[in-house]
Image (cartoon, rainbow over all chains, first blue to last red):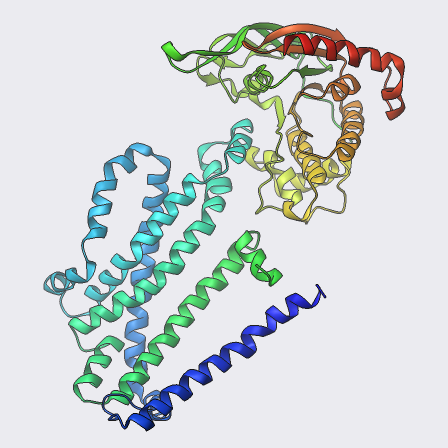
Length: 267
Length: 272
């Protein structure tokens, strides 16, 4: 009966997950109907769906979506560039790690959301302050994973490069970079989700664009069904980013265990 | 199309490898551990020399020193007449004459077999077409024709080690160093790999230094066996093995073969 196993596990998410979601929606619907709770507090799934189709038809939602996506991408890009560059240096030079570590820990302990008012004072209500918050949140996981990746280069692989008398640059591009890539991508997967959070939280606190701003606007207008619709929209955007990172993983490191296991279908 | 090892006129008469009082001491002043006592040894060009010994006898340390991976604490190492170390600095010309095969194949999982085999050429800046031709030729030599585009993970342990040998040969080294290359393989594969190694060596006739702790493997492969004893590591006995080549599996069953095995085993029993 062994050969059947992979098939069953492969089919499982396609059957069980929709069933579970359907059950949750049903429970939600029943609760609203039976408790008589006001639509301003909790709309039914059907009402949320109507609100969502209504919102999607308006250009405003797309304008705000673009603002959030833009801030996320730019912030994430900066976090990646600086995180990977700094992480590579820290991973290579111990003295740099010892020197910078207290500073890095300090910047992590500061609740970065608390910096938003400061960013607004410095950079105004435009996209810059949001980009900065997105970058600040995404930066740390990318940095720490890059450091870990550079440090985790297999010693046997290093011996090969030393025995081949490989110059520093070749050792970096042919060994350290590909070795660290799975770690870097893991950091980026965590980082991209944090970048969205950064952008949305930044929008809560200042300016007049982005889905975070739209959420606050819907709240103030007591349009709870639309509020739910925007949350769903944000979730879909989050999924899209996460999926993109997963695709990057499959494309860039098809040789890595994490991708091979996924392909095989069984853990 | 198999090429002669790199050799220049001046170096032709020099031994492949020359060690003069080469020693290795690990640790700080008060906690010094002598891994290898001052050791002198000449490895002739074209010779297949086996370093045999129990664990802790410094055979891997000795090989890593010859391979330029660990600097000696004292003494001198020459590769075809050129000093390998100047203080802590390696002589690049000497390093280029060496090819090393490790106990683990150490193939890069992100490269296919062909690119792994061609890695030394890639680092030397050899062009793509030439790399490919050379890698294919080498993979054919080690019996991996048809596996060029596979990734290391798709290959068995023995095949991975074959690819590692191909990689070590890619830079046309005059000297091939093997550190327990088949130590992680099962007995059957190991026997087959010994035959393969002999075949490859007979077609390249390089200077080879192989580290092992298997007595039959040593007797089967070696022109000369250097038996090392532990604590501190030093040369105990040197044994010449004169069997004609190619040696066969049948040879291993012969009384002459068994006599050398027994002699070495008895000697190992007293020193280990």
